[in-house]
Image 1 (cartoon, one colour):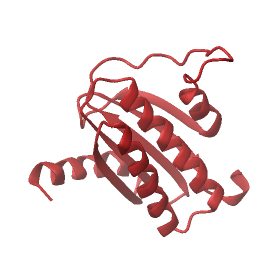
Image 2 (cartoon, rainbow, N blue to C red):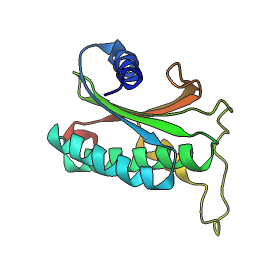
Image 3 (cartoon, rainbow, N blue to C red):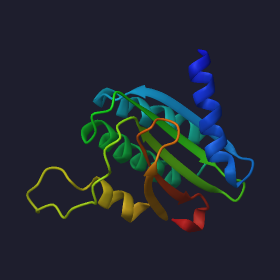
Length: 154
């Protein structure tokens, strides 16, 4: 692991660990469409390793897919950081950081025949909470979502 990547990982772990000790996992990926599939696959592996319920894994993978796709399609960034953390109280926090400093546009209302434009609407429907803020790690922005992991949350 390079020194820069190690420092980035330490910053990200610190950012996600502000609410207390928990498990976290990070991917540093190029901002390319092919990276979205890698993020989905690696997140699925990690969440299954944490023995999370299948419906939670499915929702979390869909959330990271939508957030990562937005980072690739709607920014001029060159890299993205995808992270997930499991808090002691059983909550997941999913983050996707881009390195482009343009503000995030509010989700629109796509026409019924539009083939795209529903990503943040899906995030809003699945997540318990979500938001956008400047990323202290990449200089761009971070879009985050939280999700419960208890079986009765689904």
